[in-house]
Length: 316
Image (spheres, helix red, strand yellow):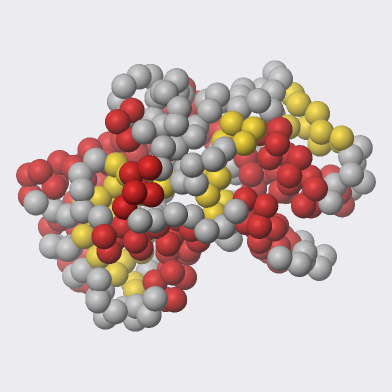
């Protein structure tokens, strides 16, 4: 990419898209185009086609998606399938029609089978049943990967697909029901601390293991891939290490400063037992994360405090 290349970030106000925006600005790119969902509804085919035809982009980062945690994924199953298919179909096809030089499609580790061997390698895709609670979202993302590959095979489009592990960071979603596990815990422990609660209840048994990547590390990886990677299929982005939900809860409890107890509601679903990513493919090509989990959580908690609460933020 040249510094004056015309670049579209789809989903620039989300956690991932905003991190990519910060990274590109830091690297000196001067022709970055963004649109809010009220300015451009990516679910509407005609609007997206007209937008791409007018703008004539060189590069596209496709970070726009309907996302949520285990509750939202399970309740809004039709919405997650329909809206994500619409967004990616419209953007990927319009990128082909208007001659975009390169497109990066972002998926999720949930595309892999529920019981795939750990760590999750890129070769595990479509080798077994998906986790049922987020199956619609996963199917949409798998379709996006296959769409990029199909346009590469038929039209020689340089469209690539990257699958990040669980993400957290600046501009995360802290909704009490529709957020992912890490930001949900930040909010829950903080509110318990504010309310002098005796305990915090965590969904499930606490035994599932998860891997977490700071969003700005993901943005750095996306930039690296856009500059250096041109292969079909998927490439994993992660840290290569995981911890149990119980260990995560204890870490967030300490960072937030909550002094009560932690209980576990085993009547609630655990989800996939483990989702550790095999990141050897990306590591061997030359990229590695830089933000360790405790440091990243402190940054995320400060961001939460600045947006949702008034008390003075922690020292990073």
